[in-house]
Amino acid sequence: ETSLEVISTMGKDMQENPDLAAAAAEESKKTSLATKALLGKADGELSKQIMDFFSTVEHRKMLADLQNKCFALGDKIDKYTFRQRTSRKVSELVLKVCNEAKFNHDVALVCYCASMVYDAGFLSVPKSILTASELTMTERQKIREHVHSAAEYFDFVPEQIRPVFLQAAEFHHENMDGKGYLAGLSGAQIPLIARVIRVCESYISLTSKRAYREIMDSDAAVKELKSKAGVFYDSKIIDLLEKVI
Image (cartoon, rainbow, N blue to C red; front, side, top):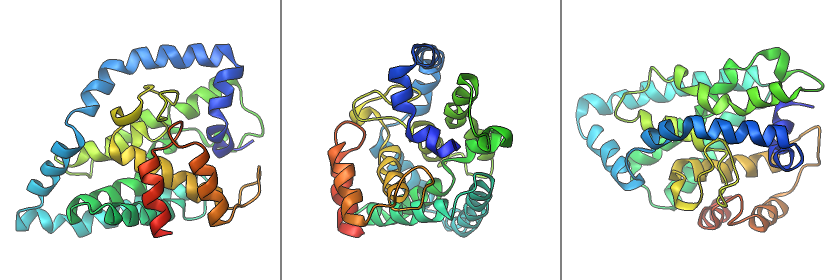
C-alpha cells in the first residue's frame, strides 16, 4: 500500500472507518479559522494582485528565479515520493488549462509554478510511512495532513503571490460536493488553482502507471473524470482539459 494509493482511496476510508472520519471532522474544526484566513481574497482579486506585483521591471526579473526554484523543489518532491516527474507533468497540464481559459500570462505562470510544488508537504511525512506496506490509522492521518505542511517550504516565494501556493497546497484534495479534505469546502468555495490541480493531477494519475490499477488511455481517463464531475471535479475545468490534451 503506497502513500499515493492511500490518497486515492481516502474518501472510501472516510465512509468505512468512523474513527478516521471523526478525526478528520475534528481536524476540520481546528483549521476552520486558519482556512478562512488562507482563502483571503477572491480569485479575481488575487489575480489582480499578481498582475500588479509583476507590473514592475524589478519584480518581473523574479519570475525566472521563481520557476527554477520551483523546478528544483518539484523534482525533490517527486524523488522523495518515488514518482516519475509528476510535478512537471501536472504543472505543464495546469499551464495549458490556464492558457485555454485565457488567464493573464503572469497569473498563468504563477499557477504553473504553484502546481509544481503543491505536494511539498509530503517532504514532512516520514519516509517510513511513504514506504510502508500497511499503514495504521494514525499514519494515514499523517499523510492526510501533508496539505498543512507545505507552507514551511515556500519561504522563497514572494509574499504577494504566496497565497496562490498556499491555496494550491492546502485545498487540492477538496471535492466539489464538500466531502474532500481537510476543510470540507465545496464548489466555488474551493480556490480556482486547487480546482484546476485537482482535475489535472487526477488525469495524470489515471494515465500513469500505478501498482494498484491499470493505466487508462486519454479518452477513458476523461470519461472517468466526467463521471465524477460535480462530485469530485469542476466540470468546466474538465471541459478545458479535454481541449488541451
